[in-house]
Length: 126
Image 1 (cartoon, rainbow, N blue to C red):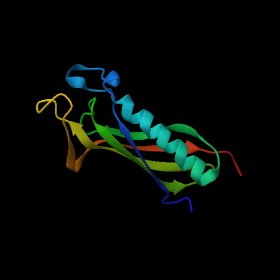
Image 2 (image 1 turned 135 degrees about the horizontal axis):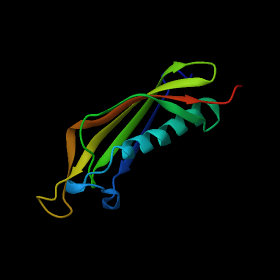
Image 3 (image 1 turned 90 degrees about the horizontal axis):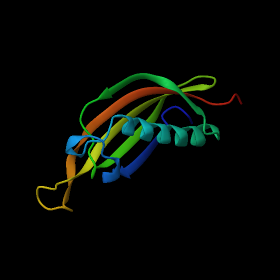
């Protein structure tokens, strides 16, 4: 079944990806992860990597920092002949706590919603 198909990716955000003061990464970081999750959705539902057509909405709710562990979820919410609408979220599930020590980190309970988006992918006819 395609509708409701969900893919979850987790990733550690390396310090090499920090782009701004406070070890912040740019918003495009979440969008790149959404693209990876969308690719897996297309493979699972259509046997093809598909192509990302665009976003109809993107909201940045909270910062993502180097040292975070993020969880990206992609869920198919609409199925057309060749298009798929996907709802994305990126939650910070763990965060470094350098004030405790250089390598300290904590699990966030609850996780922090960092980014949400709605996007459309297209797959070959078939």
